Structure formats: C-alpha cells, structure tokens
Length: 284
Ligand code: 6GU
Image (cartoon, rainbow, N blue to C red; front, side, top):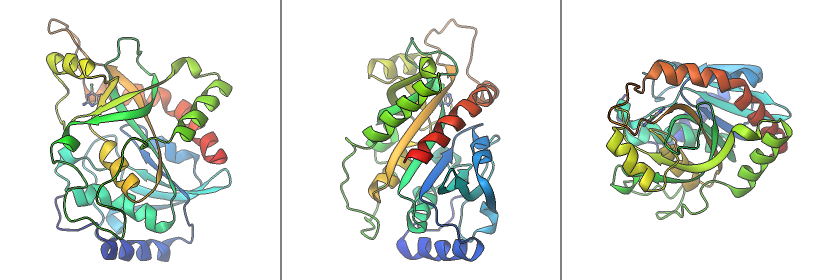
C-alpha cells in the first residue's frame, strides 16, 4: 500500500514480461470482481493463478471478502484474466496502484473489461439482489481532483483529456440485457447511474437523499477509477452493480449498512452474475 510504484509504461511493461514468464495465455477479456464476487473466477477453465504478492511491484489486498489473485485461463473460447481482489483509494492505495492492474491487462492484450461491484440501492424501486447495469456515473472523487488520471499524462497509454460520454459500451449493455432475458433473470436486471463516493464510511441518510436528488441509482466506492483508466487506454467497458443493501434515507430507521450484509447478498447472486458474464464473454 502507498508504495512509490508508478503505473508508467516501463513499469507496467516489466510486470507484463514477468507475467508472460508464468503463463503463455494472452487474455482478451479482463474481469474485475467486486466485494464477495470473487467466485466469478470459478468460471475460468484451466486456471493459472498468480498471487498478487508474487508479482513484482503489484499492490497487495487489505479488505475481507477480497482475495488477491490474477487468474488466467479460458471462459468459452476466450482467454481471460480475472482480477480477484481490487484496490480502493480509501485503503490508502495511490492512483498509480489503482491504475496499474488495468494497464497491465492492456499490455497483456485485453480489449474488453468487465467490472462488477457491490453497491447500495438508492433508487426506491430497486430491491436487494438486483443487478444494475451501469449506464453512466457521477464521481465525487473524480470531479474534485482525487481523480485517478491526475498527474502527467502517460501518452503511451492515452490522451490527456478523455471523453466519458461513451464510457459504458452501449453494445455490451444491450448484450447483457438480451442475455438476462434469455436466462430468465430480466426481472432483477436494471440499468442505472452509479455514484462513486470516496468512502470508507457508508453514506448518511442526508447524503443518500442528496445523491438520489442528483440522479444516482446506486452508490459505491469503486469502479469509476478503473473505468477511467480503462477508457484512457482504449478498453471497451461493461460494469454492473449488485445491490447488496438498500441505502437508508430515514434518520429514524433501525436498519444500518454493514459489510456482512454486503458479502451475504453478494453470495446469493454470484452464480446469476457468473452466468451472464460467461455468456457475454462467449459473444464478445
Ligand atoms: Cl450503501 N455505500 C457505498 N458507498 N458503498 C457500498 C454500499 C453503500 N453498499 C455496498 N457498497
């Protein structure tokens, strides 16, 4: 955590070289698993597991429910790499550490990134366990210079000023919706706006009401930094939130958000999400 490692081209290239000495698998699709969703890696056939701690200059994990592995293998006919365990800024990771795994995927050959996360449901129509395909985001850290792209632009990866209007691929969102219909889970799948907050505390009721007024449907502490890095280096992105808890908008409520509920709800939907991801990967 908070190492001096930079996610510049030469550092990331050296890590990519290290990976290539451990596996000849050239991944096309990268997958990032959110809290409690690490089982998505179980879909990978003939897995080659490389622990984060074995990889030089790679960050280490600190949160319960997150393992720390890169899992290489195949899903359907595609070569994939799954990031089992991710890095949040609230843990104290630098923007370089958050960027590094995504840029590594890029240099290993990934062209499409699939991201899942656990999130609080702000939209009153959402239920526990709903899957919310992210169509757009609001990022409080991103808007206020706690943006993962702050710093000298690394032109080897992308341009200084990137558009975010097309961050979440329309094609991939449509594909996910069709698959959800085919798999008879369309009733729990929605599309919405993800609001990215810094964390690590869950939002207060007043904050939740504000976020709702701003047009957000789900709230979480991840994903946007990875998506920005991915879009900067030209990856196609699909992201989905699992509603692991319903945000409390009433100060008198006896309910309260907790990490255990987040993990137990995530476990219920792991298989559903796994099946959607598997089918998407086949058709990408
Ligand atoms: Cl309610 N808020 C945030 N910020 N992150 C979450 C969450 C809520 N539930 C899961 N992750």
